[in-house]
Length: 227
Image 1: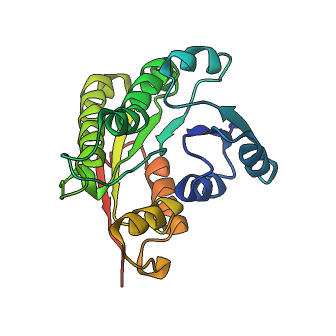
Image 2: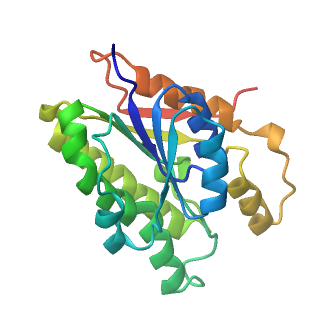
Image 3: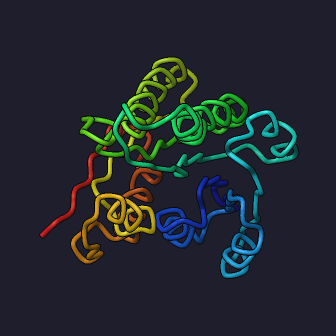
């Protein structure tokens, strides 16, 4: 009997992460977040899920937190933060926090979990953003973190292809999540979630990436809101 894939999702209690957890309900799930109560509630509604309490701003704590994890079939870097502001106005604390969560944490988690992914010839997915392809005014810190995430994914893909590890960067357009609602508040714009990609639609796309046959590598996937 074939065992189920083992999938770790960061930012699992956010809109996209929670939708992906439900889309992968037939996997053995390891769901990362900082809010223990929310994680445990999410895990309780899934057949085979366990919480992973991890502060993504503390990479020095990752190694001990990841002890005794089974080799992963899939690692989905989904967690992210955003704070809009002009480069002339955002101080080092904003940049440090944004880069820590959006770039440094994925790099360190990837480093620590690569041995298991090599063992399973697994899949590594970086949930990026349209801001990882083009930077706009007020988006400097966030775009810089996502440009860096794109570079990280490209480097890992080149380094690990011989080991059979597949690496995908996913570039969603605006998605109807709490983060998008926060962005609209910062932009001073009305928020209408029906105008954007729904988290469940993005989760189905991510599941398609995870399920792609071995002869098909989806290296870069761009998703935009439909009409």
